[in-house]
Structures are given as C-alpha cells and as structure tokens.
Image (cartoon, rainbow, N blue to C red; front, side):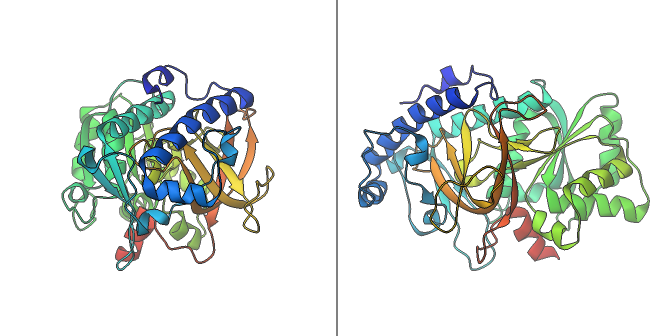
Length: 361
C-alpha cells in the first residue's frame, strides 16, 4: 500500500512535471489495484472498460468515476466494520447526498495532508482562529457535512477558536473584538465559506460602519462563488472590499470537496489555485472526455492519493475549469495552476455555501 509517512516528508509543491507524473502514476496504480481487489462495484466498472489495472502507464489513463456515483451507491474498499466516520456532501432539500466512508487510516492521512498543504501557506505554528460561522453547524447532524468537515479540518491549525455567528447568523462583534484584543499583535486565522463571509461578516460591518484591525489576519475561504457572481462581485472585488473594511491583506480561496477531503487546492499570492504533490487536476472536453489543452475550458477531473477506504482516487467533478500553466507560476510553486469557471450545465447545486445561501437568501 502507499507509504504516506514517507510522502509527507516531501514538500507539497516541490516536484516538477515529469517527477510528479511518475510519482502519481506509481501511487495511483497501487490504489487502483487496491480498489479493484476490494470493492466489487469498482471492479465491475473497471471491467466494463476492459481496463488492465496491472498495466497502468499513466494516471491519465485510469478510468474516472463521476462524483454523482457516490450519491447512488455505497462504495467501500475496506470491511464496513473498519469505518469510523461517514462524510456527506451538501445538497438542497430533496437531493441525494454523497456518502464517503472513512476508516482510521484514510481519515488520519487526510488530516496530515491538509496540515502539510496549509502549513506551507500559514506556517506550522497554531494560531488563534475566528470561524465565520455558527457553532451549531457542528451540533446538528443534518448540517454536519462538507461545511462541518471544513470547519473541523481547518480547526487543527487553531490553538484557540471563536465562532462569531449565532444560530440566527447575527454577527457577534463584541465577542470578536474581545478575541482580537486578547491576541493583539499576533497573526489570526479566519475561516469561512465565501458567501457567508460576504453576507454576514462584510455586509454587517459595512452596514454598521464598523472597522476591525485584521491587518495580521490570514483568511481561508471556499465555495459560494455562484451567489457572489450573481451580484457581480469578482474575486478581486471580494478581497478589496475585505481589505477596506478590516485591513486584511492575506486572503486565500481554496477548492476542494468532501469526496477528496484533505487534498485541497489553495489559491496562491498570484490568484491561482495550485495542485500539490498529493493530487492533480485534469481538464476533459465535454464532447469526448479527451484531455483539453492548457487554456481550454472543460470538465474538471481530480485525482488524489489519499482515498484508501473508498474508490475516490480518480473522480470527474461537475465543475468546469481551465488549466493556466504548470511549474512556472510567479509564486514559485511547482505543479499545475488553474481556475474554476463554474458548474457544468444542468449540474445540481451542491456547494455547502451555495446550499446555505439558498436557505437564508
């Protein structure tokens, strides 16, 4: 099986194109054989493609699973008794949700990998953390899906934590001010989902004409761009508005999904999402699922070396994107860098922030 401890010693953005291709092909070949041997449903799918799991020359050739398949089937590659956690994707009322089954090994490796990736941006030191959400999201099992998983995942970087929204989504300004006074002069980590940050943090501060000093802040946010795009708010406009209201300069968007928790794609200082050595993106043409050229829009495929307990290592998403380049971003990180342009036509809305927005708009 994949030696994760050894791989975690490799800097997450250190391998160039050829070395990363060799590395991922080796690791994903191991995972493909594992899932083929241990997940009957996965074996049937692979056999239907007449694909030889013992002769994989490139991870680009491994058949992908549509993410929607996890809404229809329970897919496990370990005994059900080994499962310690079941993660669910977000969905609006009446929609089916994906169920992702994690054993101890997979869950632990997801956490370790997330720490490795995020630490390369914010450092290894744990920070005081402001969660722009309600603590109820961790108590309500119906809400504990991608949204709760995101909060818990990023909470490993916190040495102290405050939720600044109550159950009615009202902003607790007094509590936040006291928290900032307590940690005056220190870096502060802020985490939330994009639309919620805009709607209940930025808009509330603007309404009250209240400024905060978050010049030492580092904000990680994800999802929810659909609603902001409808309001003609661009990523650059989002950052500038936050800077104006609270002086924050370090704002990082990220792209990720519950089906591949741990292998997040974080925005760099140049505004590009980056793939680490633990994962990659492939853009496929909707016409024939062939590999799109750099700069050509298509459907986003994501690969990850983390899923052991379920066959989620090679997935076709319902998102569209464009690969901008590889190994030559001005930020210095190696690997592909890309942008997400939206959802494919007729795809279900599944983002946790967008789903939230539909409930509270």
